[in-house]
Structures are given as structure tokens and as C-alpha cells.
Amino acid sequence: MSGLPTSNPLRKKMSFFTKVTVFFGSYMFSGAVLSALLINVSVLVMIFGLRFSEVLSLIPTMAFVLLILVSRACGLCYEIIRRDMRAVISSGVLIIILGLLVNNLYGFEGTAAAAEGEKLAEYNEMKKGAISKPFVPDILISEIPGDPFNPREIKELTVLNAKNEAVILFPGKSVSWPVADVPLQFLSAVKVELSGIWPAPRFLIRDGKGGELHSAYVKLRIAEDGSEDYFRSPSLVHRFYVGLTGDGEKPLRVKAARGKLMIKSADLELGEEMVFENLSISFPEITNWAIVKVKYYPGSRVISAGVLVMLTGIVLLLSVRRKA
Image (cartoon, rainbow, N blue to C red; front, side):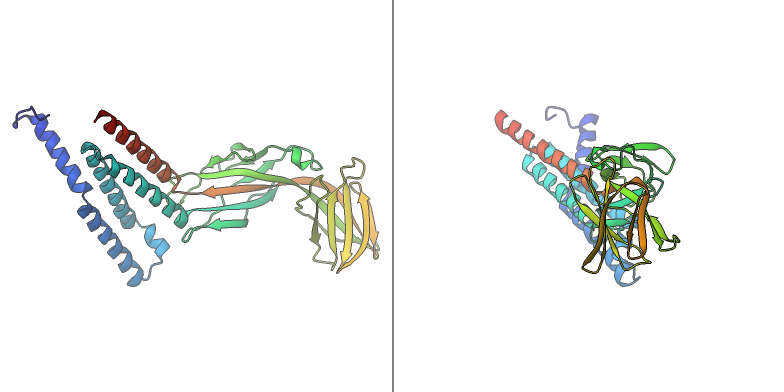
């Protein structure tokens, strides 16, 4: 390019492009945009009384952040033109830090439970970012194929999305899930995966005259390894411990306790009653329930882009040194 005459239009075009890149990529421009962003946030929070999370989701705030990203991208291009690959590597590190910051602010993950025919309603366990607003995706548990008495053998779960489309979930395998009106969703999709499947028997409690006192499905975390879980009935003071025996004829081990006193214990088949203190409990039927994990980390793609930029800088730096 140095051999071209000054009046060459290609040189003029390249020179203008370089000047624009230098201007937008300068630290002075980035600092000015950052200062404007801080003033904008301060005015909206301190004068207008908006919450910090609301300010970050406004279009002007997102525009300032986009300008900063464009500025650093231009600076990155200029450093590549100058063959200063150390700046490219440092830019990649800054992008990774930005992605981690976005995750810590907006990201969350949680687990929700539902039985067949139920929708996910709320999270039982959750980790969330500083200003994140957790949401529950529209997921209906359609079918949990398999034997409830052997929950560890069940390896898949069929769910329905908002469009009534069937999706199969597997343990440890994340699936992208469409969710409307989610901030920063263009940066990363919502991920869901199957976390576990457990039995959900329906209990039936009767009084001494055979009248029904209470009946409901109860979600238990039990398996064939002898583990037990317990539940309470709102109509009684008792606790009921339930486990799986592994016996095909009497698959349920049931214990009734009041306080620290163990009253009765028995192995039951479906529909069989255990009598205690002028009451009886039975389990007429059993189904499955599932735990679904939902993850939303909008900075994931930003982190991936930062890693790619950093690796590119390292490769180019080694290439330039080898040529030199």
C-alpha cells in the first residue's frame, strides 16, 4: 500500500476507514461513552427513583453499552492492523470479564418439580445473580415413561412447550427453551435439562369408620437403595415414612410415627391398608414426578467470544514473532 500514489482512491478509502476505526476505537471515545452511561444511570436512579435493574434494561442504557462494545471492537481492529497482538489478547480478557459480570448480574439457575400432567410452577432450589429476575418457563410434564418402582431406570422425560410441541429431556443434556420477554436473551438461550425422576404415590387416609380424611399425591425422593422420605397429612399429627422394598409383591415400606414414637411399620402392596391408632393408610396408585433444571446465563456467548478473541491474539502473536 505504501507504493500507491497519494491520489489513489483506494488509498483514500482505506485511509478514511483507518481514521474512523482509530476514532471509534480510541480510549478517549470509550471513556466519553462510559461517562455518559454513568451519568445516565445516576440521573435515572437518584433523581427519577428507578431501580438499578430497571435502568439496565432501558434502551438508552443498552445503546450506551452497545457503543462501548463497538468502540472496543474498533480498537481491536486497529490493534490488529498495527499487529499489536498483545492488545488483542488483553481485549479478549476484558470481554471474558464482561461476560462473567453479565452472568453475575442477570444469570440464575434453579430446579422445579412437577408430576405427570402438571406444569412447572415455582423453584424449590435456586441460585441467582445480583439483579436477576428469575422466571419459570412454560413447561408441561406430558409423560414419564417407566416403572415408578424403578425410578433410576427411567432415562427420559417428555414435556410440552407453549406451542404444545413435544420435547424429550435427558439427564445432563441441556435443551434450548424459547421464552418471551426475557432481558438479554439475544446473548444466550434459556437451557433446561432433566435432573431426576422419582415416585409419586397417592395416599389415602381413612378413620375407624372407613370415612376418607385425606387423599393426595406426594412427591418423594426414594429409590431401591433403601432410602426413605416422609410426608405429613394436614388432618393428622403423624409423620409417614415411605421407602421402596424392591419386592414386586409388596413394593412399599410404610412407617407411621407420632413425635419420636414409631407406631407401626409394614410392607404394603398397592391398595393394601396399614391400620394404626384407629386409622388406616393405603396407597391406591403411584405415578412419577420429575425435577427439571432451568439455567439462564446471558453472558455465556460473550465469554465464548472473549475466549475466541484471546486465542486468536495468541496465535497471531506467535505467528508474527515467527516471521520476525
